[in-house]
Length: 208
View (cartoon, one colour):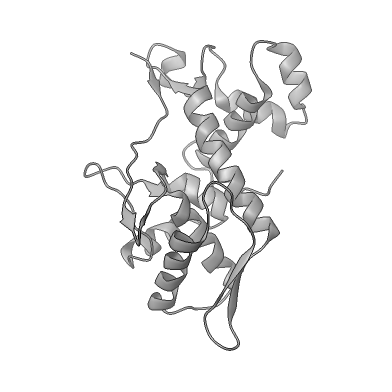
């Protein structure tokens, strides 16, 4: 049986709007927000973000959760829990998930949280990754022992990431696998970096 690496989704009403789909696990959120999984877990415990738990073991987070944690981390301050929740509410109600743009939230007369160019780029890439992951990455117990592969091939995502880290380019991979789009290789690299083999740390997203 073939299983796409597709996370359950849901929406929540919020002041006339809907929450972005919960499509990311904690490692993926940590990867894009450039924080540790421990920081993600702490935010969940403090109820700063609002995960969806379809069962006792699974935890999924949304686009706005990841962006909130990235904004909090870049403040480089020990913010009160209520202030962190205020940042979450601002992201939820004021940032367009389909087309995020720079903006700012004034927390006080002297403290302003800014959604700047690099964070806008991260937010856009997060959405692209979600769509590419669901289209191009598959897990099937009958293929490579259940290791994640590029859909329609036996090519492990870990092998793609290893070649790119070793210096191969997307063009070189495309020459070796002409039927695989470059965006599939990009998704494979991110997936492998966000889901490292046991004992290895999550590699942060750097916008490359």
